[in-house]
Image: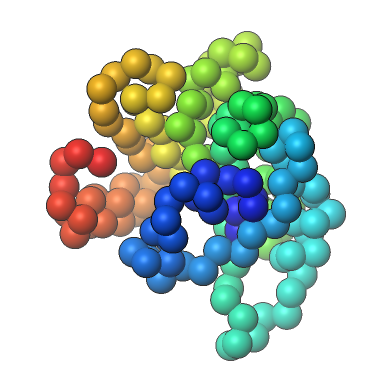
Length: 157
């Protein structure tokens, strides 16, 4: 699941579907970048059926580009994690500007990312580097990411 105003939904040219065959469920973002918690719960209550794409997790943005750069509160992130944990689903952070978000909230990165299962961070946004990004997750997640990086040509992204 992703927000309808998320970067993935609006600026990745359908890469999620094209490259990995994932069909995202888009839920409406509120003006502050959140997705209403009851809306998340309703989306997760759909009946499992061979005709319906399974939901495996939710991706949130560190600072929401299309919502005036709003930063999600740690309390909100924690509430989303509790909902997903009940269903054994994962929480991903599209952390393009995660360092900026942590500074805005006055916390360190470990505190800011503690509820996420997988974090992608971009060095060129907010860090001033010419390029680069990283993925932070379990050993299995990192191996999976390395495999995709090789299939897509390696080094630049």
